[in-house]
Image 1 (cartoon, rainbow over the protein chains, first blue to last red):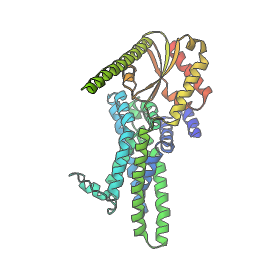
Image 2: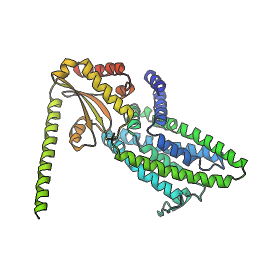
Image 3: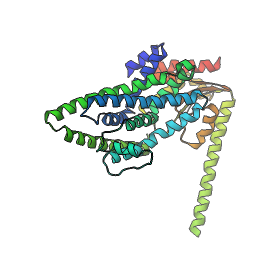
Image 4: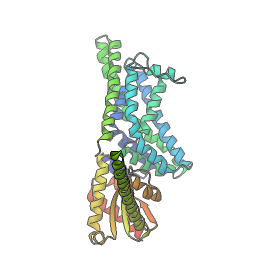
Length: 234
Length: 140
């Protein structure tokens, strides 16, 4: 982290700054729990490593949509103060129940049926192959759940260089790619290693089912972790 | 019935104390902003990270080490304010603060130094340089 800090201080190019801020966000201890959940979610199709890679890209696209969307809202005149207060104050609080609900849906404890989302939620479940929509949504939501640390990196450091001029509006995309990169790499490695073990024993289907269940429990566990953190004041 | 009355009077007294307190706080803050005193404000939420704690600790140390006499005389101050508390809302609105922010304020002049102090979170010497540079900018 100190190393990235040093490069950041000496960086004269905003694209390098955005890239470094994204990497610092991805590897800081605070969003680590959501990153681990994301890695599990993305690599749930261990049978198909190409799909894991595409899932990783779509997850990153989801993050890019959130970061660019927020930057655009601020660029076109919304009060940065209100937006920042809303997301930095509430992002983490909404994360806990959301993670627990996703975990329970993945375990098939219950099924949520929204008229327009029914196809989507069914596919999140353990039986489905996992839709790209759910991965995109996960990227969008996880990006909006700002931790105290990532909140400062985004709102206090990235936003000022982004909204300074129209030519800076691509920077949140660079930032999003950097936040998604470690997740893509680890998801792919995980799918590669677990998939190989599964193939070795010729029980890939069973492996995949149990892997999904582990991911579901992981979501619930991380959700409970965030819930506890909300009630424990530093 | 007696209990209800007792509870009501306790509640009224409590609300009175709370509102008085927040009024005093607000008045203090308003006085500081309108005067020529130099104030370093650190805004945060209840939930904080390790770096956030380090930023506050080192920034406070930096102000006290750089300007011991001014701090004693009440001319310079370092104030940490929680954005989750309603009494902070007024000053946060006034300064346009929406998240974790370090700001140097003198009269009408204000300078956001969040990005700079964040990079100096764990290094007191670097923090001193950033705090001094921020204060100098609102002074001159």
